[in-house]
Image 1 (cartoon, one colour):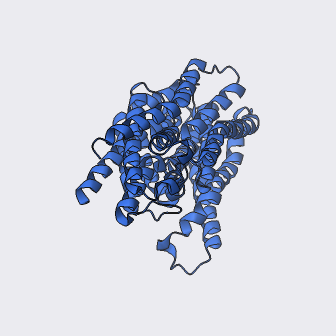
Image 2 (cartoon, helix red, strand yellow):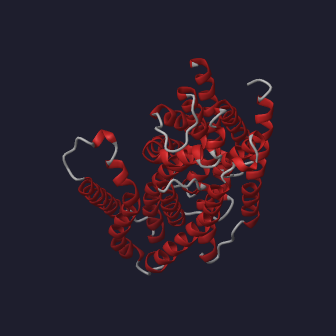
Image 3 (cartoon, one colour):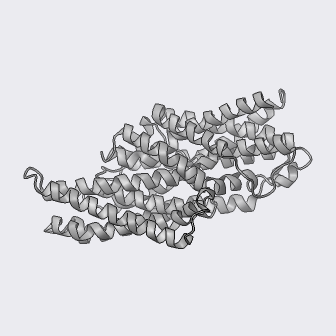
Length: 414
């Protein structure tokens, strides 16, 4: 049992590694592409916040993938068949993500895991074993994610472009907008995240209402961010070599670092489930000899397995996909990257909160394209966009076929 669990955990790390090389890379791509963060800084931020997002929110999406794609009731009498299927899912997803990353294509890991689960389930039981209703809901989320994220990004960018970026006295406008942007960015993140954060078991002994902790945390962070950036702006204004637009982009770069943190957190909260959901099912079956039918208590060590693999994959292989997203669609500067990342993080965190496995790449690329469409004198790299969309489309059937083939081959050994 222990040796088998170690081997399957290593397989999950392999899948998470390739997910990190692909998905985390594109979630951090705008920050690296706009030069707001170096690759090393992006890796450090991703490492910390992927873990945090996975632990706080990762369970909801993992449970959805573990119990609501294949109908678990069809495997009640044959739990070991479900185990074999989830092993096939790990291999299929890992292989496809590795192939896509080698070509620099940001595919959707959620497509891969859903496709692989559906593929093995069809072969193992039949098409009736697939929960088509839930797959329909997940599929609708995939379609709506880039649209919603793009609309949010466009709206945010248009507002800032008219009231800040294109003002004659950009520094005065920036000074006025820093408090609003500081409060807004903390609010977008805090409304979704802080309530869940303060409900964690480690904080249960604090004798203060959770709602009060949420409000105090948000206000404190907003004030700290506001005064830090005001101080930074004052220092930059004293440098005669810097003009207004350069100072604006420098300050927006600081905001983009914060938004990059939120995207990394959002990615950890949603996409970690793609790597660890199969491991969760396998571990549950081995521990109980039953299939999981509803909510599952997820051990923290499994979340850490996923986080470790993801960060390692980003560090070693993430550069190609970062280049595609950060440089291949539109020319990114911090002001544009900031708007794209805020829209992405808000969309993904909302989906994670309701347990819907969506795609970070869908949200981010929808945001980037949206900004490119409304930005004057900006050419959208439609060839790159077409390649990315094609990769999204083929991922589901390719993963389904791989999952079915690998499941059948494993039947000869397991």
